[in-house]
Length: 253
Image (cartoon, rainbow, N blue to C red):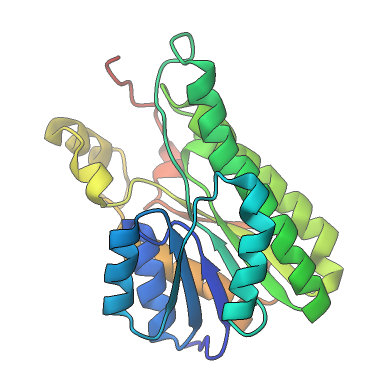
């Protein structure tokens, strides 16, 4: 069992199913959490659910404001952050020949460039504090690719290579950078998938079920803890074995 007591943690993408589970897990382990997202109503709901967390409405696509966001977060947390969880991300699916420049660029800018900037400005704080952990949430398609998701796969694969590079650059600074790579997770997004297609997906997963947000949260919490002090540059796959026998799923466009 591990404890995150007094760990000062920033979580982006906090208003989604996985973000909510991450915050719930961290609060249970006594962390000091600052949650951010773009949905103000959901942030209010999070604050009502977890009265001891901090919330900030922030759009990570506003790249020029990210340094100020990190500075403000550090002030609110009274130091740190000790841990950054880059969980925010979007999809804009289409076959590559039909994909517009805007669809490509929006996904790369939010998923990859925002992650770069959040890491860059947070690392400055961590280097000063001589301690830190960054966990970037990627995806199974960042390893395998997927039809209709060339932009999303490129952004998530980019995060993996980026995280490995950061791990090499800052290991001597007592900073660990790792990834958690979910497969198909049971969220409101996957609930919208056609039931027949969902059953097809499950049939390809060795564990024979979709993952839960808690599965992802638990892996993230472990990497945030001192039990993972000698782990850096790694990716924990949370996909029920799906990556071991991945087959592309073809969507109708």
